[in-house]
Image (cartoon, rainbow, N blue to C red; front, side, top):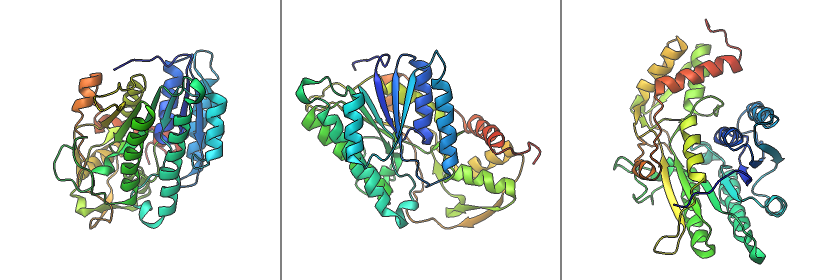
Length: 350
């Protein structure tokens, strides 16, 4: 792999007010004080916008310090081709991280339009802008990194899930859009010689997280004394991956654009997961201990779009970066609960 520095570089982060996007932006500003981060986010109301504004405030506060990188925020959608082309023309990013996407498996069942707009049209706009960044002999984009998802593995029964596995059976539109992103990125890398890396994230959790995620909703309901809904009667496994591990993995990869392989493609794909699937009921029990309160449980059958298990094979991540996520759910959930109580002003004795 060929290593690049991020200092004195302009980095475009899409979805910068999102869970992973904000975490990555904060880390880049701390670790690369001479970098410039351009963040774009449409600030949609899929979940509470005030949480996105809170994340942005954290970023802007850090960027205002003398020993941190600089940050510029643009409010808008990656589905707006004119806006994206204008950003590339104005800022000429050397590194692009596409984290903007409509998330959520179940939401995609009833709201397919937003997934096509953001995950397909939006990603196409990013790819096209990267392609044209080399026009007229310009240096262009040195590395495009984009978010895929463990959802692409669908109902695969072979575990752990490897990037070499066939993923032709998505069980949700969300998963289908992410697999489409992988195919589109590979084609653009082959045709236009763009160094591209795709990242399949596995069930990310932690402070600043998304309120639509199970652990977040469980916390809200447990503290309120309301029943939590547990699908497939609790017989499910997830490779829960703590946010700091995800961000560290992304940062490592940003500095290492893939070299051209024997097929003429500068393209890599990695799983980023904890490599340790946890039983859902054990995860809930750990959350209960962190909260000091027992959940009222409502057991339900498997929901459309859900999968029984996720389990990441991170062999390639370890081989190339000597790194794998390793935060335990006890540590990760404890940090989340501490943040949650502070953010929502929850009495520790509640």
